[in-house]
Structures are given as C-alpha cells and as structure tokens.
Image (cartoon, rainbow, N blue to C red):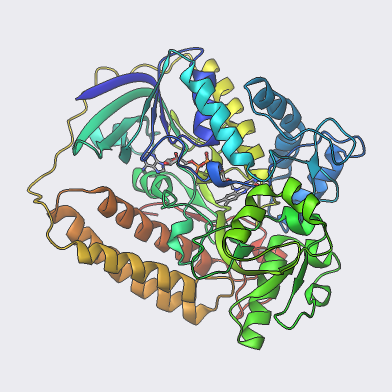
Length: 535
Ligand SMILES: Cc1cc2nc3c(=O)[nH]c(=O)nc-3n(C[C@H](O)[C@H](O)[C@H](O)COP(=O)(O)OP(=O)(O)OC[C@H]3O[C@@H](n4cnc5c(N)ncnc54)[C@H](O)[C@@H]3O)c2cc1C
C-alpha cells in the first residue's frame, strides 16, 4: 500500500518529534518509529540540556567550552548558532509542557546542573530523568496535533530516491521521495511517499558490546542514508561515557556526569584518586580524557572497573538530586551515600553522522537529517555533555524554517514508485546466523575499534567486518526480511563506516586515539573525514 504524506519523519526521539510538531502546522506528518513511540535514546538521557540561562553564564563561555571540547574540529559558525539559539528553543520546550526542575537547590529560576567540560552551571534537567520528561511532553504534544499520525512498530528499511526510479543526468542532484517501511506486526512493507523526509533515527551504540544505548540504537539511519548516497562524516569519533554502572546484573545503566559535577571523585579499587594525574580539571575533565584515563588505569591494574565516590554528599541531597540513580544503585545493593559506585566506560554517543548544513539539509534534495544521526559540525572531535539534546531542538526548528521557504517541493508526483519487491526470498530457518554475526561485530568493534586504536587493530577489524558484510548480503537477499536481519545489516554497514573513517585519520584527536599517531596533527588533519557510497 502507498501512504502519501507531506512530511515523513523517521524516528520519534527529540529530533523527530520536535520537527513533526512544527511541520504539522503546514501539512500532514507521518512519524514512523520502529518500536513503541517512547523507545529512543532521548528517553534514557539523564543529565539534561545545556543552554545559557544562568545569571553569570554567557554565550561566549558556552561557545568556548564547546570549541575546546571539540578539539579543533567544530564548525565555529554552527557552534555559535546552536548556542545562541538554544535558550529560545529550550523556552519553547517549556511552553510545550516540559517541566524542568525548578531552582530550589541553587537560587535561580531553574536548577542548573554542571557537567564535565562546562565552566558554568547551565544544564536544565528534570531530576536525573530529563529525557523521559522530554519524551513524555513531546509525545503528548504530538498527540494533540490532528495532522500527525504515529506509526509504531514500523521499521524504515530503505530511502526511495529519484535515482532509484530513473537514470539522472551526470552530476544532477538526487531527490528523496519517501521510504520503504516494514510493518513488523503484520510482516508487510509499505511505501511511504512524501514531499519531505526527515531522518531522525538516532545513534549506533549497539555496534559495541558495552553501551549506554537502548536496543533501538543500531545505526539504521546512517546505513540507509549511506545506501542512498549521502555523505557520512566523522564516524571515527565515538564517545565512550566514562561511567556506566558496572554490575553483572545491571544492563547498560548510565551514571550521569552530573554526579562528578556535584563533586564525585573517581578512585581506583584501593581508594586512590587518579584524575589529577591526567587533567587540570581532574574529575570534571572532558569525557574523552576521563574515559581514556579509566581505560589506562584498568589496563595498568588489570581491574575491570573503578569507583565513583559520592560519599561526601548527604543521603538527603543524593536522593533529591539523583532519585533514579540512587534508587537503581540501591537495587543492586549500593548505597551511594556510603558506598562508592563501581563504574566502567561504555559506548555512548556518535559524534559523526549524515553530513548536514545549518538547516539540516543533506546532499540529497528534500532529505533532511537531525539529532544524533546527523553531523552538523557542532561536536567536532568530541561532544560537550548535554549539547546533543540542544542540537536536536535547534536544527529541528531550522529544518522546518527551510522547508517553509521551499515552495518548489513538488514536481515528482508523476513518478510512480514500485511496491517493495521481496524477490525470491523465503523465510529463514537459520536465525543462529543472525545472532552469531551480531555478537561477532560487537566483539570485534570493542576489541579493535574502541577507546584506544592502532593501525594493526583497525586493519584486522576492517578485514573481519568486510567478510561479515559479504555474508550478511548473501543472507539478506535470500531470506524474507525480519527486524533482526534489517538491524544486523545496518549494524555491519555502520561498523564498516566507523572503521573506514578511523583508518583515514592519521592522527589522534578528541575521541579518536591511535597509538601509531599519538599526536594531534593540525597541518594535515584539521578537517572532517567523509565517506560516500561509490566514491
Ligand atoms: C543513557 C543516555 C543518557 C544521555 N544523556 C544525555 C544528556 O543528559 N544530555 C544530552 O544532551 N544527551 C544525552 N544523551 C544523548 C541523547 O539522549 C541523544 O543523543 C538524543 O536523545 C538523540 O535524539 P534523537 O532524536 O536524535 O534520537 P533518539 O532519541 O535515539 O530517537 C531515534 C528514534 O528513531 C527510531 N528509529 C531508529 N531506527 C529506525 C528505523 N529503522 N525505522 C524507524 N524508526 C527508527 C527509534 O526507535 C527512535 O524512536 C544520552 C544518551 C543516553 C543513551
């Protein structure tokens, strides 16, 4: 069945929903999301959203912190734009019903958190479950718009572009016309045709064995956009969050950076603090420095975790400021008012992605991207904590303003889009192949393309992942699609892109650290890496 809409939005996290709410003022919007609408990285974000609202804070300071963290690779124009437009966008979130924690603890309208790399308190939060509050409010707001239809359990498989339907003259720009979308409950692939497509499918943490990301983060948007011919940039910069709860029964639970913002101290298992040996900001150094310091200490001691000590704070303060973290730790027998929390680094955020301009436009006409799937130039080689939610709201708004000025968005309606063709595929009776490949990719990426890399490790990872991609390709065309198979194919494609970017960059900068090139090389490498299919 062909479903026609003005705007097709892929993903229901902060980026997709913010854009959808705006777009619904001018046309019909179909939001396609592969699980329940709430399931997203957004829903798990804890610390909050950075914006200059404090009395002693300034745009200049937020810009400086972002540029410093980005290690020479941020686009200054984008940083200035996101930071200066941030306060207006966060106010808009409040008018849409987001309830940030009010300023009881520190005397200001909102309680502003402080996180690593920030030189001021500037993080608006809703206790320690900011993302859940943002998702709640946005889903409610989207539900109130009669122009928005949300398709849950609908998995976007491939983008549909003009070049898939007819040959384009040499050098002509391609145009996005919609997407094939797999209804996972009814095993049916629909054709969605739209005037504009917004890719807001989030990140790819599941490429690694230990991650803070939920199961949805399999890099589908990156893989789809790559197959369609967009440029993908800076994928070597994967941020490892230094402090994921380390407990055999805890699955990917993040211990927010805001704890170190409130004076938390990282210690070895024997109680010795170690961050002063790595950075003048000690425990509040940027994430890459802290993650690498923990990695180095773990390699030295042979331990599998370090400790985060909050025992200098009262139980009353910890329960009020970090209710979810306090409660979760307690479930695992850790009373953070007394016991230090066992932590280890985990894959957390993808700084690179589909290359976009300041309006979220990709190199394919009418295809926009926003949020973690996109690479705008804000983060450079390392993301400053709490800047990603901010980037999503600012770019969603700008993308909408661009769409409003594009009067010529028609012109392709006469092109008929063929329905999805399953070919001769038959149902698979070998799902062990999928699960085996899945584990192999994640293990390979963690061992060879993690916090510390080398040419040899990257070379080995490249050969293995390339082989796995070939196997999956054969498998993909022979068997009918399932959500697991689609995710596996995307995960492998994204792993390969990460390795490709990492192999290109012959230096160490920000989140990319290669022991064969331990220094930053501004002469040759103060630039983005970029990959594109067939280039
Ligand atoms: C534990 C944790 C804590 C964090 N804390 C913070 C923080 O405090 N501050 C901050 O700024 N950032 C934080 N981040 C990062 C931030 O949450 C994300 O970068 C941001 O939420 C991404 O938003 P998004 O809308 O781009 O993607 P997401 O919120 O991940 O949404 C992606 C959506 O796309 C859907 N989707 C994916 N693939 C498909 C497909 N093939 N078809 C259909 N739908 C699909 C998903 O189901 C989901 O609905 C945190 C992340 C994590 C994991």
